[in-house]
Length: 504
Image 1: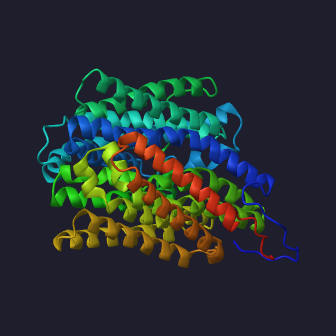
Image 2 (image 1 turned 45 degrees about the horizontal axis):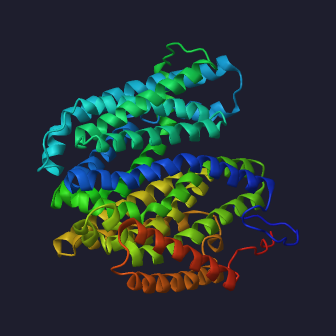
Image 3 (image 1 turned 90 degrees about the horizontal axis):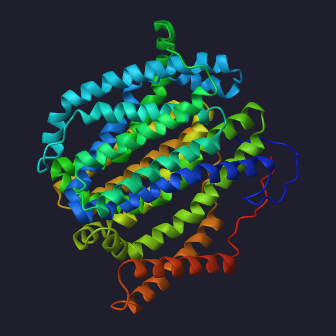
């Protein structure tokens, strides 16, 4: 995406440099609101399930959730590519309906068939990965898959017709509804078993889907609109390669859990997953940007505005590093008290080294996710697929080796780190994006120094408060103190990036 011109370099504040960047940060904020609820649900579900029902139930839910999302993604076959590509430029209601509804029908049929297939195979899955748990009724599988695609299709309509606020509000409301439902059940003394955890998700997806589809009905005429086989075949031809890249990315993300479950049990996943969740919290930044960045990059690229494209990527990377580098240092120090607060002492002991290793892996994964947006716009989706496949394969092979040689859950986390670095390296070789946009060494050195200072003082405070504070008060005190020290370190080192743009 690099370009050249004779313009003199101008100072570039990485937050508000241009109207396009202001739009980028505004959209990030809007989409981020929906993601905050998802992050909170993931965090607060740990104590609700682990402390009340045990790590085995939490581990089984993590396994089943990933299985169901993989089922929905793969069985959609890429149908819907046409409306995702052309709906943003279509304004007339009947034309929107003609684009959108055939994709909805095709997706629904594909997901229904895929869910039925997984339902029949679920007894094998349960024997292989959830040996010590009571039975889970596989009829919930098509219920979840169809409710999820029903809700997600309506979200897609508002996302691809430029209503990010509606899209984000729907995500926020659905996640909040699920979290409140779990909390109320726990307060009422109901044991959160696997069936109930999935049933709540089905109910929330269905409720939100109904509300959203009522809103869609007010904008476009709804009627049964199946497309011809030729159109569906074209949709699959164009969309399925993207689905394969997504599947590779999803498998890369969850492969370690299945290795642990096969080697140990679902309880092993329950010991590992809370630490993984804490260590990967920082990924919320590139996940949000994954929704916002590609459309803006595509517009800048189509207008031959290479300078704006480069600035968007560089600003995104800088902001992510500004949060990710201290996150690694911070969680390395406070992993045990955080896990003891969220889960139990055995979970904290098992995840002591998992958290910082996963945080380091998340830095590489986050950069790779940002680069995926660049590669998508550059039409180099094959590089994304190869990178995700290599990262996942490396992760699986090294995880098995780590367990074989007795390195335990920390060894699996180390394998995840190696896989993440491998995938990032392949993406960096496959893109035209300047490496200097990812690694501005002076900026990174300042972040590292401020983070090291923060971690040292947080460790000192943790030891000073030992015995006087525990649980939530201790975690809040450590996190707040660390934030203040890091911010002061950035100010002293003048690390806020307002560097001039390079000559283009």
